[in-house]
Amino acid sequence: MVVSNLKRETVDIEKTAKKDDKPLFALNVEAVDINEDPDVPRYDPHTGVKRALKNRHISLLALGGVIGPGCLVGAGNALNKGGPLALLLGFTIIGIIAFSVMESIGEIITLYPSGGGFTTLARRFHSDALSAVCGYAYVVVFFAVLANEYNTLSSILQFWGPQVPLYGYILIFWFAFEIFQLVGVGLFGETEYWLAWLKIVGLVAYYIFSIIYISGGIRNRPAFGFQYWNSPGALSHGFKGIAVVFVFCSTFYSGTESVALAATEAKNPGKAVPLAVRQTLWRILVVYIGIAVFYGATVPFDDPNLSASTKVLKSPIAIAISRAGWAGGAHLVNAFILITCISAINGSLYIGSRTLTHLAHEGLAPKILAWTDRRGVPIPAITVFNALGLISLMNVSVGASNAYSYIVNLSGVGVFIVWGVISYTHLRIRRAWVAQGRSVEELPYKALFYPWTPVLSLAANIFLALIQGWSYFVPFDAGNFVDAYILLPVGILLYVGICVFKSNHFRTVDLRSVNLDEGRRKDMESDLSDQESCLASSEITKDYKSATFFKYLTTIFT
Image (tube, rainbow, N blue to C red):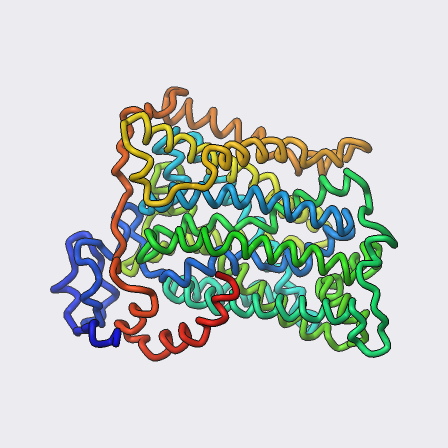
């Protein structure tokens, strides 16, 4: 048995902590797995965050983190503006780009898991300026997501309790999520793991319902197949609708790259990151293509409920269930959206706060944001980023709601900027690797179809960033045009500003002299599987039994 190969001992932390390790609070004892490599510190030496995320946490983070309210509610808006064919094309094409980006992440983050993900690597292999542009674009993306999800969560709860004002729900959950994030990354990973499974089960249930519904399996509802592709049609606004849907889809896919940040706090990034890349990419494609196919099959793009004022009523899932004759199904859908909102806010706070922490360590943000407590929790960064989410209170005021919508819509082009920088950084790292005489065979993970994947991704993201506001040209819509493109000139100004005032030059890093060993590290549990690690911890019963229970479900997605 595995248990016979594992030992646990209770030790005094203060006596066993390495000089580059941090003690946990004021606890005197802790269960320690002696199979952990003693040469690998439990805290990242660059950022001070704790390495507590398990392989299974990382594996489902990329999948569960992107199944948010956008897929359940926002995709209905995309269906209305583009039609089922536009939705299918958008999810497929952006999915291919996401696949390319994740292949780049698989190679560069498996090689360099320490320090701060792709923003740190952009600085090391190009310049401070590129790191700043990438990092702040990423902050804007998840700041917009966070504000939108606080508003969505509050709107959903008003569906059940309209007597509580919108700002009341926002403030209550603001404090709740603040406290939750301050507990530590281990609880974050465990919570996201189970929420991801709930979201997967919910989507699969909807797919099964959709097949039964369009096949005539609902009483008094004849089979109709894909008739909505013929009437009202596959496209609602031609190519203009397709261009609009691309922006929606890029926002829905944002978060797939979050495993790059999580790798810094992973116990075993050498195994967890490649596992996440290999196992989640095709799952994401299946999830999103499934959404596009079944939304288009069960709901016509001209259904008036897609423009409803209540978020739960405009969800294609709620509309389909209502069309099938179950009027009370809105409550079930509301609960499902509530779960995705909780996960989305949780994930946005994690990603945004860690990005601020990494920027601060690179000297690109106020130094206070780099501080972590004794448990490796970046309290100032969490609090500051969570405070940005309070901009959702603007939506309470009728006069400020338009400004709020413009701010939230910034996320689309931000995703293209971040993905483009990741792909470009990948090309730079590979060039440095070869320029210094290193063999490609030494890389722990090699991206598929290199160099075509990063080149395709870089070109596609530049193209989409330039054309994503095309629909506002004729007739010219000044407000939405500025909203679509404002991040591009701001990014250029930020790049020039960093070069002039911080770096004092426009030169990039010399790839022939960059240190190729900085940021590399070994896994903490190089000889243990995740299930075996569970047996060696105080969570032995709960974690191992849950891993066994979901073993067969996991095979569906692996």
